[in-house]
Length: 411
Image (cartoon, rainbow, N blue to C red; front, top):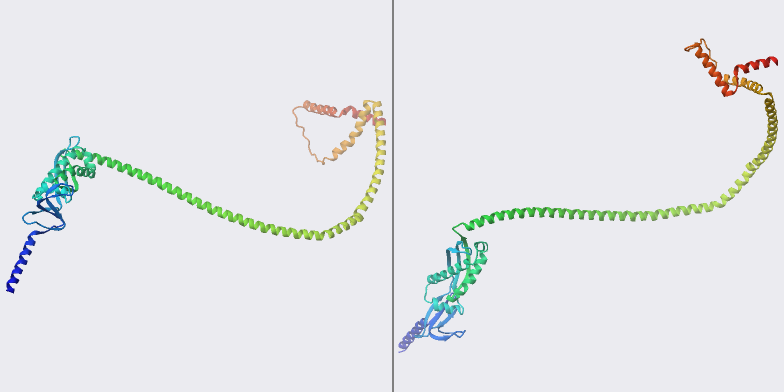
């Protein structure tokens, strides 16, 4: 009996475990469980015929609910758009990669349950791809090829904003979108690329030239600053040296001034000490001079003055006598006339000629040659000489000599 009860209990426990396993559902982190069958009201007030469970577990009500799983994992979609016209009518080819998933929060999850429940990931991926390619064509129509090619990040962000509403209506969320390549069959982008390459090279050369110029300017500025700093340093050193020399000079000046003042003070003291001795010596020398020099000099001076007075009297008397004799001579010459004057001059001429002849050294003449053109010219020269002698002295040499001979004969 106890065995039967044990077997019955074990069978019942086994049946309960099997039933619990059929009714208890565990939700994985990358999925959502939809318990469909009973009507409920969502948090936004919307009435739906299901309830959702995420990241947990729940029991299914037997016979009233059916459980479905909704995969929330990421899906990768390759986008390929060919001959999509951009603004300006240039057909372009665009390729990219998008990462999407089913929305796990309200209200997106309700849209996904209504539109995507029961569909495979391939079907969901195809729906998302068609939607994104349509949005991609719409965004490309609003942008120029230059904008699409130059700023792919802005292009992708614009595409995300454009596709967000459409994907949200489907219950999908676009995580990332990367534009991989943009090309065209008419080589429009290649021409733009070549133009941009030329401009890039030009800008690169300009930038290089500007960089070299700025580098040269910077180098010159650095050299100028270095030179200024070196000059400031040299100036500071020179100023310090000059200040030191000035201070040393002031110190030496004070020492020299003190030394000179001491020397002058010593000499002044010595001079003051010798002053009475020098005064006494001066008195002694003065007295000695008066006795030895001044008194004899005064005596000699008086003697010489007396002698000079005597000589002066004699000279005066002689002068008076000579003056009277000359006066008498002049008067007698005036009374005698011109012959007396000539006679007086002849008397004075003889000693004069004697004095002149004494000044000439005797010369032995062996032969005298007279050099002249004609005899008449020589006589003319002698006559000219006698005439000049008469003019300069007033003495007629032939007549006066004849007169002198006659006078001497008469005497």
